[in-house]
Structure formats: structure tokens, C-alpha cells
Amino acid sequence: MYVAVKGGETAIENAHRLLDQKRRGATEVPPLSLAQIAQQMPLAVARVMSEGSLYDRDLAALAIKQSAGDLLEAIFLLRAYRTTLSRYCVSRPLRTESMQVERRISATYKDLPGGQLLGPTFDYTHRLLDFTLQAEGEQPQALKQDNAQQTPADIDGAAVAQQTASLSGATRLDTNAQADAAIEEAGQDFPRVLGLLAQEGLMREETDSAQAVPDITREPLDFPSNRMQRLQALARGDEGFLLALGYSTQRGYGRNHPFAGEIRIGFTEVWLEPEELDFAVPAGDIEVTECEMVNQFVGSKDQPAQFTRGYGLAFGYNERKVMGMALVDRALRAAEYDEEITSPAQQEEFVLMHCDNVEAAGFVSHLKLPHYVDFQAELELIRKMRKRDAQAGLDQEQQETDAGQVPPQKEKRA
Image (cartoon, rainbow, N blue to C red; front, side, top):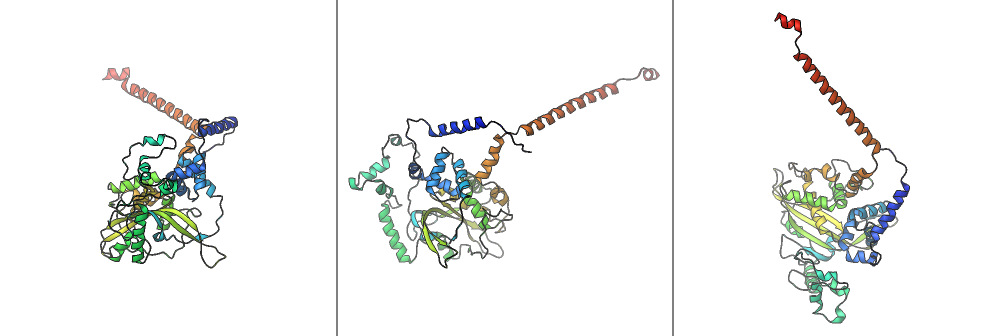
């Protein structure tokens, strides 16, 4: 039972004012601009866009600034704004094989058509604090070494951003030239790594569904759900929740032994199909991260042993999120492959009903709101129960005392 409580308006207004002060911090420190947040906190922006289900870097930066860096609050703000937007048309499926790749790696094959690109990554850093970043305007040591080999005219933000390491140690420009040559020779875009397995018949074939794609933002989830609904929910799901579930599958809760078949990050073009037109038009490029996990399937009496896949896709640079998403996606396909469902990551209702951090944070946070009437009712109930138990104890003692007393006349007869 929830009871509305009136009053405290002045206190609430003061709380808002104090929040503004807390967000601003010391006034002698220059405030953060949205451009600074968008450009210098790209991973935070990517997470807010992905879990907020809205691709807009400026609005994501605004949400991060307004929430004082609380990413869950920023996701809530962006999700709330999204509900006010109109839907004009539907986009075509993304062709990520034609992505302008910034990072592309595979843990299954060393030599790939198009090559492997490390791109920007924390994977090979030593996780040591770089104290040069404390100095205003000071460049990190890695950029200093890069700039020492360039002319002063070449040293600017754009040039530095393009200096991306590859597995061979060459610059990104050299690597891209080699990759373009390999792709041109192959006669296609960056081919999918899992396509190599499919050519040998070792990868379970994925077929397109003729069913209309449901929209979980307009239609509630129903169970059992289909994979289209699951992938939408996972794409909006909390990164930490998916990471923990994915980790659980690797520790034996789900019999999942994955390989990172391919992870790619880059820009891909979005095509829209307006209702008034009979053809699609390009709307621009968006940055996405895509992951395909390779998993073993022992086969059955109807199907030979083969590999299966888990899939993850998210806005922006969101590598850890899509890896967890791909692991959970494969775990949720246990019923499809007639596998025994034994772990939380394989139970779709448990996963899908608890992966949304906006719903989770909202329900947990509501405990901070006044529950005075509820608590008073339970307090009174506890008091009555204790009083009843105490009285029952006294009655029991009295009964035992009475049972232990022998009447005088009965004692004489004995």
C-alpha cells in the first residue's frame, strides 16, 4: 500500500539547490563543457547512449553533466527524453560487414582477410596511473613518443587520434592500406570471421525470420520470448549485470566455453525507409561495437557437432558490454539447442526481467520514499505478535504449574 504524503516542498527545493551546488563543485574550477565530456569521456557517452537507447552524443553528454557523472541517472534521463520523440520511419538492418573499421580483432584466427587492427584499447596497458595527466595540457607519454617522430605541423588532435597500433606494429594508415588491398582482392567488405567456419559447414546456419520484428519499447515482453526480443532487451541491459552473467557461464554455470570469434568497432551507415518513398535513403553513420562469440555444440541425433554463436551489438565504443551480451545471448539459446537449463544465465525470465538498470534502480530507489503508514502498520503488527507470544508463554507456564500441584485429598488417599 502506497500513501501520498504532502508537505516538505521547501525542503525539496533546498535539496535541488544543494544538488546544483554539488554538481558544480568549487566555483574557482572551470565548469565542464558538453564538448569536453563528449570528446574526452567517449566510453561513458557510449554507455549512456547504448543503455539509454538513443544515439545522440550531445544529449548523452548533457545527461552525464546533469547527473554529476552518475551514469545510471544519465541513462534514466536519456531514456525519459527518448519517450518524447516521434517515430518517423524504420531503418534497414545494419550492414556491419561494410563498417569503417576502427578496431577489429579475432581470438580464433591470426590471419584474416582484411587483417586485424588493435585500434584504441586498454588491453595492453599496464594499468599504472599516468601522472602526466595531472598537468593541465600535458600529453600522455605515449603521445609524446608518437609526436617525436612527426613534424610540428603534423602534431594536432586529429593526427594523434589517427595513430592507432596494429598487430604488426605499423601505423593505422599503413595497416588500412594493406587491409583495403586484401578486401579488394577478396571482392567484398570486411568478411565475417564466422563466415570462414560457415564455408566448411562447421557453423550452425542462421536464417532470417519472416516474422515482424517486435518493439519491446511499445509491446511488453512475453514469455517464452523470441531471440529478437531478447537481443533488444540485452542491448538496453546493464553492462555490469550482463558482464556478471557472462562471467558465470565461463565458470561452469551454463556449460559455456566461448571463443571471441570477432569483435569490431567502427562506423556503419544507417538507411531509412520513409513510408512516402519506395526506396531507402542514407541518414548518416553511427559508431557501433559488434561481437560474435563462437561456442561449441555437441550435436544431436538430428544435427552433427558444430559451432554456434552468441551475438552482441551496442552503440559507440562498448566492447565489454557486447562481449557480455554475446555470452548471455548464447546461454539463453539453451532451449533452442535442447540443452539442459541449469543456471541463471540460461533462464530468460530471470535475465530479461532484471537486466534493465532503469527499472532496477527505480524500484530499489523507491525504498527511500516515505513509507510511514506501511511501517506503522508493520510496527503495530510486530507489537501485537510479541504481546500475543508473551501471553502465550505465561499461559503455558500457568498450565505447567497447575499440572504439577496435587490436591490434598488425593495425596491422603494415595
